[in-house]
Amino acid sequence: MGLKILVIGSGGREHVIAQKLKQSPRVEKVYCAKGNPGMKQDGIHLVDIEENDHEGLILYAKEHGIDWTFVGPEVPLLNGIVDDFEAAGLKIFGPRKAAAMIEGSKDFAKNLMNRYAIPTAGHQTFFDFKEAKKYVESKGAPIVIKADGLAAGKGVIVAETVEQAIDALEDMLEGNRFGESGAKVVVEDFLEGEEFSLLAFVRGTEVYPMTIAQDHKRAYDDDLGPNTGGMGAYSPVPQIPEEMIDEAVATVLIPAAAGMVEDGCSFTGILYAGLIATNEGPKVIEFNARFGDPETQVVLQRLKSDLAQIITDLLNGEQPQLEWKTEGFSLGVVVAADGYPEEYKKGVALPNFSDCENQQVYYAGVAELEGKLVSSGGRIYLIEAEGTTLAEAQKKVYDLLDSRDTKGTFYRKDIGSKAMK
Ligand code: AMP
Ligand code: GLY
Image (cartoon, rainbow, N blue to C red; front, side, top):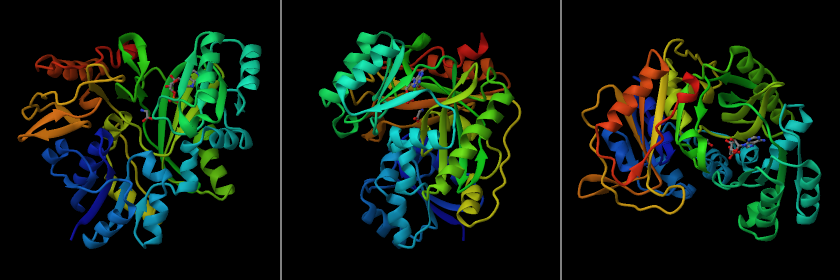
């Protein structure tokens, strides 16, 4: 009998995780709560239980003989889903609540980095608007203002001028725009350089790095427009030298994992470092306690080993074997609803991709209407392709999108282009 695995989450990240798990010959069935109807095309079994209903999920896992559960998004991790499953005697892969704080509180992450000399931007934490304002005036612009808690990517303002920075501070500390998560603000030096995402499987002090990726956070071409959850990604990132990555593993991931063990909040799960390759080496701009979206849709294509075996080994105290592709590239482009990340329309009919052979489709904000997929969220789906060059992978994605009617939606036309200049 093969493994039965439950994935928590419903986006494109969970779609690719579930698909990769399902490809394992050791796996019998992959369930996803709540998942999305686009996943059914890959034989993923949807479970209609909300991700914050820990009791419901625990009951389901017990009744269906789930061997282990994988948690995709940060919110259930910070709500203690791992602690709750473990208390119920169930196997689950992800950090406990105390360890997920590396993503849940910027202040927590900064303290960790300070204590263990992990390179990051200079920064200070503020509760008081007047003090924060004085600090920003003394520092000048550009400068970065970050709300302390989770703010779904919207809590970071890269201010070009001191006035913009002060407006953001006022908004967060006095305007209460971010609710609880804005009561505390981190003001950070602006870092100049190329951005990259370095993820790793982590178990206590053990760190197993993945190949790196680059996300595209801004909504429009040439990195213009508002910040989003991510509009596309590619992996690996040729303009980041191997030494920079090795340095990031040695100066960021390994000390972060060791520091958390030392601090009594050992991290097991996926640790994600958002980094900037500065002239002085890699520096951290954020930590996440989970896989990134859309990075995962390209990074997991680079994994040659069996993902289900890796997680099983990590859960069982065994040594996981990781092998990554050394040739070629993977590139993914997000298709979003017109208007995203502001207000957008729902219920847009989606093209049929069932005939595509050289591309993968990962669904996110989709619903089913009379047996057909329609949009239900901002980021709707991602098209991924591989190529021996980045240009070839990019062409495969855009050729497919160009051949379909994408009315009511938009996508960036320059994903990966920066790496080809
Ligand atoms: P985050 O939500 O923390 O990923 O931040 C959103 C975006 O703001 C990042 O992807 C970066 O492009 C930018 N950013 C965050 N912190 C800094 C920093 N200290 N210096 C420069 N850019 C930053
Ligand atoms: N792509 C950025 C994130 O997942 O946080």
